[in-house]
Length: 456
Ligand SMILES: *[C@@H]1O[C@H](CO)[C@@H](O)[C@H](O)[C@H]1NC(C)=O
Ligand SMILES: *[C@@H]1O[C@H](CO)[C@@H](O)[C@H](O)[C@H]1NC(C)=O
Ligand SMILES: *[C@@H]1O[C@H](CO)[C@@H](O)[C@H](O)[C@H]1NC(C)=O
Ligand SMILES: *[C@@H]1O[C@H](CO)[C@@H](O)[C@H](O)[C@H]1NC(C)=O
Ligand SMILES: *[C@@H]1O[C@H](CO)[C@@H](O)[C@H](O)[C@H]1NC(C)=O
Ligand SMILES: *[C@@H]1O[C@H](CO)[C@@H](O)[C@H](O)[C@H]1NC(C)=O
Ligand SMILES: *[C@@H]1O[C@H](CO)[C@@H](O)[C@H](O)[C@H]1NC(C)=O
Ligand SMILES: *[C@@H]1O[C@H](CO)[C@@H](O)[C@H](O)[C@H]1NC(C)=O
Ligand SMILES: *[C@@H]1O[C@H](CO)[C@@H](O)[C@H](O)[C@H]1NC(C)=O
Ligand SMILES: *[C@@H]1O[C@H](CO)[C@@H](O)[C@H](O)[C@H]1NC(C)=O
Ligand SMILES: *[C@@H]1O[C@H](CO)[C@@H](O)[C@H](O)[C@H]1NC(C)=O
Ligand SMILES: *[C@@H]1O[C@H](CO)[C@@H](O)[C@H](O)[C@H]1NC(C)=O
Image (cartoon, rainbow, N blue to C red; front, side, top):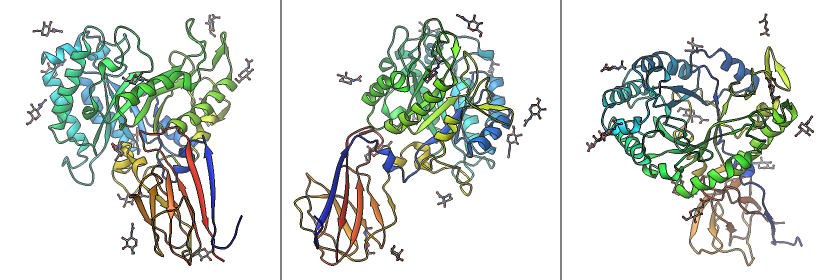
């Protein structure tokens, strides 16, 4: 019934992902691994033209070797940063030339690598300080550091010959060493990244280094399809659900990212099915929205199988000479993806960099001209002509307040909210959404309330 001064409350209970609505704020950061470790940006530039926006983060791999360190800090990181992306350094505890050094975490514990680690930290600090080499001013740079990833597998030397206790000790030691160099969270973000399944003697949980030593919790996971004799086609939820739940159990506050993911096109037997891969990419796009995964890094190189979505052996279209899967590009067209801020020398905001952007409240425009009175069993609290108080239904104390300016729609990121008013003269339209905070309610039932305060 619409009558004078009545409140119309449209209460829709839905399983729609919160992000569909909350993304008035751009939160997601496109990332990619392009295989060339920052030596050439040519393909990345073509890739960016195809997508229509550049990758915020470019993943690379480097080993524990003096010469690699020179290349990394003199050339590779500069190329990536100067071409407008933030490097994510996968710091693989291999010896020179990728030689295996089993027990390397135990050797760190024995201080065998002190010189190397200290040098790396110093070089990193200098690089992060930017052109002038002075940490703490406007030309400072940013980087992600992904140390000794996929430790819960059994294929890397940092898992072989070292115990999880060695690993945790080494992580803490290196982390503290760098923290002591004033490499704070606005410059360096640490990614602790597991394989999507445990393989070998230890679980991801065995290797958990603790919340205070981690900024992001990462996962690597692939749809290997039928490309291997032992593998089969898996959708994103089959690949990631379980580990995401486990990581959320380790920390309810740290953002989760996917540092390596890709799909083959081999869906049945040995036969490539481009449609199947296209569909998989679409599913992944929906999946990360539902799970509020805000950084995802595509492994764009045909290595074990035809992983690439751009410039690989297959695609559903061409961009120049590059074969491409349009489902990937389509996913990145919405404006909830972070783009580089060209007037910010540090490329993105601190909140975006640290994945805390979902914690901020956003307001967009459109509402009342005057205020009106409300009589409703769900209404409580007060409203002045410009101030709206939002409170939990179960709480008497308001959790959030926001001023309604002329023609503004309020989008409040909080738990179930009620808009309240005792005023008697205005027309207001307020839309209140319950949005998930990074760690909570990733895909949850939310209450979507449209409350229209009518005045005639
Ligand atoms: C971009 O990367 C290329 C390497 O492909 C490098 O030569 C060039 O200097 C970079 N651009 C800038 C502005 O530094
Ligand atoms: C790396 O450099 C350090 C000091 O500059 C040196 O002590 C060490 O032996 C070098 N290691 C290798 C593998 O070259
Ligand atoms: C580290 O030192 C301990 C005690 O000195 C020793 O037992 C262990 O073998 C060493 N680890 C490696 C990998 O050398
Ligand atoms: C970091 O600094 C603290 C305080 O000065 C010191 O106790 C600690 O040993 C340092 N850690 C490392 C790994 O150097
Ligand atoms: C989370 O932790 C609880 C308590 O330790 C445990 O019972 C539950 O199985 C865990 N859930 C997952 C998904 O690991
Ligand atoms: C699958 O295809 C590849 C190349 O297309 C071929 O080398 C391989 O033998 C095939 N495997 C099977 C099991 O048919
Ligand atoms: C390829 O995959 C699509 C989508 O999964 C499916 O509908 C189609 O039947 C598949 N084609 C073949 C030849 O298997
Ligand atoms: C495609 O590749 C051919 C041969 O390598 C080259 O001549 C041509 O210029 C390329 N075209 C584009 C659009 O890159
Ligand atoms: C871009 O960066 C500049 C400088 O840090 C900042 O003042 C401005 O608000 C940013 N713009 C956006 C849209 O975030
Ligand atoms: C978001 O805010 C909550 C509550 O204030 C806090 O506990 C959490 O650490 C924040 N999340 C991140 C990723 O900073
Ligand atoms: C609302 O606006 C009033 C007057 O401009 C101001 O004093 C008050 O701080 C604002 N409240 C909020 C929550 O922004
Ligand atoms: C508010 O909306 C009305 C109707 O759409 C419009 O005429 C008015 O100019 C808007 N006021 C402001 C301040 O945007």
